[in-house]
Image 1 (tube, chains in turn cyan, red):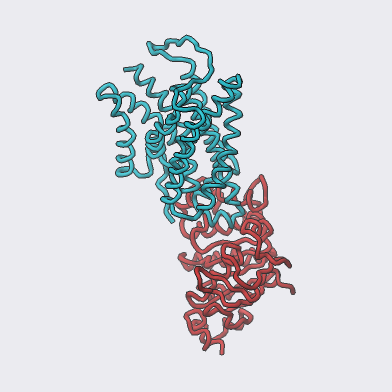
Image 2 (cartoon, rainbow over the protein chains, first blue to last red; image 1 turned 60 degrees about the vertical axis):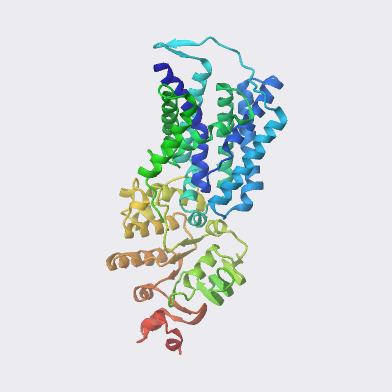
Length: 286
Length: 242
């Protein structure tokens, strides 16, 4: 039971970065980006190319890919979403679905369907309170927690973060307060790209690299973001942990194939009983 | 005295139709100009166009001697053309301090204290509410915050769209007093107002719009003395101007 809960905690922690990315992008651009799964996949394969094929350390590969993928996300926005700016959220969502198909199949085209792994040294797991933990899990936990704190500081303590929240709140007013909305949108995509790149590497470390690796997390990631409260970094973190632990614990009482029902049930319950999520502020409507 | 902000032959609107049909208006430096007119006359459209939120289809907006038709709203603000919209004029999901800070940072003030001692004296109630969510402020507090945000970096011109809308007469008087104090510090003011009597009481010039055109302009004191002042902004502008 304790081991299952711990495994769930780590599954949840892995989802925190993509959940943060979803919540951030939804806050500023007001559409659910269903390409996040495929974006993580592509970023993970880029890190794989540097790490397993070119021999870089995984840390260096991840750092370079995180920055590079932030830039790639800005380009994706300029080519895909910018021309659709001002259209409805449904239009943008459909565009993101199409983008997801393209990106996932690009990864499939380049690397095929065979599962691959990063070149990392295997280390002996250790035990704490009768729970078996491995080094990858500890790294995952540390990186995700650090990213959550960094995001919170960014959004509340930096001019760019405050501007992101301002654009999310009232884009027209942001313009007459001197905020260049397009610049803030580029920053949002850059940070989203970094989060997704690191998230993709963490998933690749936990499981294996294969084309649907990111898409497999899509429902859980959206469940985490909605449960925590869209727009709340703390909520994304808490939502991801809750969904991860609940999904894993559900396997004690029902077949593992049905655990996808946990995030779906969380989305339904939250939308009915507490639309702002656990940590989201009840949004003050215009 | 030279015009710090002007529109000449200005056409603008939404969709296919023009709401402004060749407007000529000039705000002289250091003065207060109030725009009045019936609903739909184009008052808010005019200030939105001057702020850059709406494109000029014909004609010219000039600010501090330059044609600013191609300037983005942030560029206009950073050069000293501040604008307080009629509604939703604060970031409701940000705190009072964050609203002030963001205005100060992005309107060209950089880092540092967003509320100068001078502004703190003008808006003495704000520091006590720094931690409050702007959306939870009362109507009067919200308008004061919106004004303070527009002033965090001393603008050359302040454009106010219905700053007294939806607040009590007592607060409204306080807001007009504050606007007069702001003007006394050298900021030229362009106001759109339904509360014409109080607005004209602090103004130098009045411009009456109707049907997207200027019906007439006159010194505010003269307009205030007109017997049929109400008809100017209740709809019968042509008759009043005759």
